[in-house]
Length: 207
Image 1 (cartoon, rainbow, N blue to C red):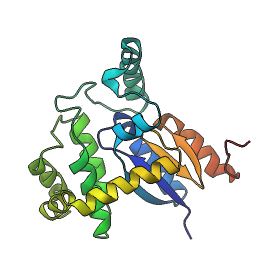
Image 2: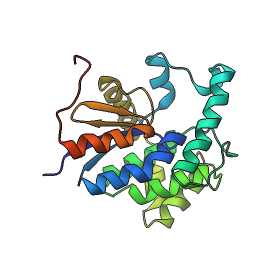
Image 3: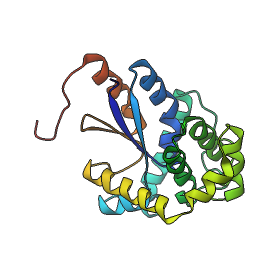
């Protein structure tokens, strides 16, 4: 039976976008089953003592821009550092992923397309028509999923993901939780791969 990994992310997160392809490579290499957990970032930040980008000290904001360029080169990507339609309210876009899972549909192709749409194409993923088009492009029922995403039921599932994230000590995107051990940030993907390769027991804060 495949091992499971909880994947906490938001389509608004540049780091989830940067790490998505190498994460999926690890998933394939080690035959992992992904539990996709789209999550609202602002609430995670506030409840864990973090600061949203606009409230961070200017030196931290400047360093973030340098890091984006480093990782853009490292991962072989070509994206805008400040895309035209970012930041945006990711509730509807993240909800499409939840709606797809609810309908027993694989959200992976939509995620790849949607991440690129934000950071490379500068599309507005808060726009229902745009989301519908993106889902249709990858063979998913766009209108159905976007309409379902807007419902209270999907909103409740989104909130549950937030609660589950907090219970797992996840405080940002992306967060990968393997056997209860959190790997936070796309720059921890290699460490995740090391853990899987070695087969070691999970580390904990208790040592």
